Image (tube, rainbow, N blue to C red; front, side, top):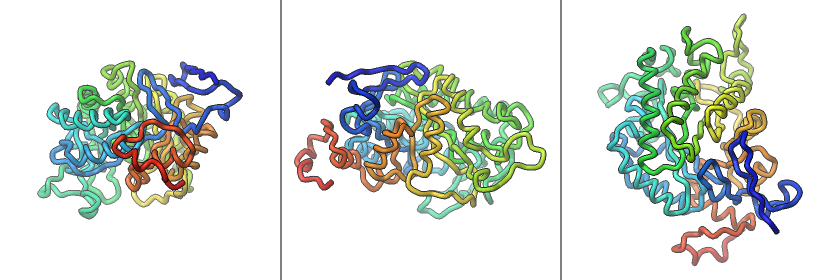
Length: 398
């Protein structure tokens, strides 16, 4: 049976399939079909979602990061995205966040990226700034902000609106905004030097770039606030800055929160407002179209995080419909994430055309070798079991 590879220029994605009518003609499960973004081929459609480890001192990668990410690469994930990595020291979520704001951070990150590549996976890194949600405790150290005498700092945001009962952030002026854009660009240069093959810009979960996007947190009256075009302005500026230093042959991802879970849960727009009172799926699709035009290759679709106390109706695959909308309406590849735990579930998402990539979070924390189990469960023939583990390949339970 012959294999054909077609390229969709609008979506910058190669599709590999065996000749035959429709997606059902592809040999084997789609979850284990390789895909190519620009000049990078990923061995399957399984990625590790970025998840903070809160295990750095002054931003430096440690042995924990090497073992943590290396285990998921050895476990068969095609794409391994390192956690939210701060582009500025005040952009850390906690004092223990990974960092990429200085050249000295590169060596430790390079060690991690090299090991991931040696296992056959594609190393990626998420570049982030926590904005008004910065300077908080690690989850196992309690909750809430870190005081200055404990090593905390003054946070920044679009304006002075706080997150819940956190301290009010210092509003960024235009000089501060320019500094943020330059920091993302410099971080991308360092990521390239460290050997990462993809970068993801974090514009989700209530952190700085999302704070500019959402009317919930952005009360500015200048060119960065008010209308949709003004509120999204910073994200394309960051994308453009990163894309100018990130090689054309390497992919660029952006993570978004598709909804603030406020409009959909019944919070109406204010009287006389010309735009919604929160960030919505419609605005996400419009943003995704703009980002695709600027060289973004994948939209990583998550949700929520802009405000405390919001009820999110979670369930298996609860965020997948938002990824499906981005993929279908914006014409850009989408990554789906959110309570995807079973191989059959992940395969169905791909078969139904709802996403191009499956990103696993907590499931990969529980099961670092989930891709190897999934291949066995779905009957996929793969050749990237670690040789050191081949004795365990036979007799696996389905």
